[in-house]
Image 1 (cartoon, helix red, strand yellow):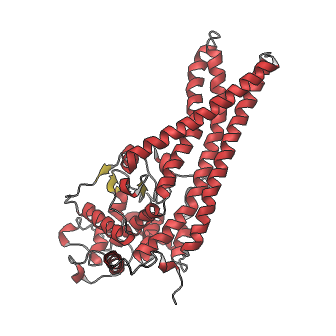
Image 2: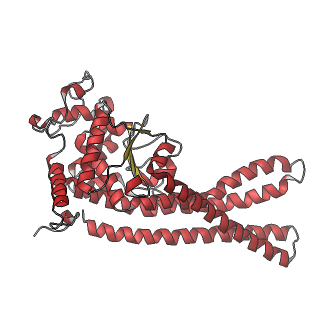
Image 3: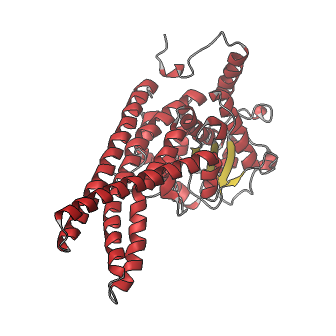
Length: 413
């Protein structure tokens, strides 16, 4: 996991975003003009009128795309990460929660906040989502929010949840949240024409057969939906081009915070081994698909917003054999893992925090490395993160003793 190589690749992907956006806008404008010219010629319009129509179509298209993108970006920017989370039906996690899963979630976030030297974001949970997923949203670190699915809290043990949260904090530290907000705005502008076109086609098409009043509306709708399909194509392409490399960078940066790869790899293996995977049922999943920890919905390889799961695991564990996922799928088919029960096996959970024991003797399906039970309750976090957190706290007290936060990516002397 070479952090600096990933950083160079991400800069290239950011430039690719600008190029793809320009190509998308130009393609939409050209298609809109071609349709206007064709329809004008079919109607017997004069050349001077055709030129006027083309100029008007260009201006309207540019203003519409720019206006929708700007409005959407400003709306999300002013609302902060909590607005994005609430738009997906997420609910906030109370600070005084007594739910052991919520308490563990809050403790892990606070630990990673110390390790990454960033403020503690607002916490949310996506109820009813059984897939393992999460996202970070916001325009700055001051208004950031992190949301995890109910499935992530249920299935991940403490170390694995820590790896996922570290991944999301990496997006915060690397500035991905701001880019993601802008990306949502850009894609909203590119795809809005398709939405408007469908509405106009529906409203104009139903009346055009009875009289001519619906014909102009139908024609405008046809132009809008044709240009909108170009926007949908480029919008998905832009998300895929930018998101893949940033996900790999976030994986690499997460290792900088936790000082270990097994936790993040374990979470990815559970995504591959469980039927629910990382899929989400929310109707607005596609809007935030580039912000999620794992693939929130099924895309073709060209539109995939995340690198292949096996590739991500092998970057963390080069010796990983993908046949292991098939074995995990078989084991977890009848007995899905319980994160809190795995915590007990590692000595990281209090007895009264555990769910009722299932009838199966081995509920998790895979052996779990045991931790010293004496660590509870004085040291609830993994040892490596505690060292990282202590180092961050020491550095804050002694600012002259500065080190690179990503020094783990550099080779040891």
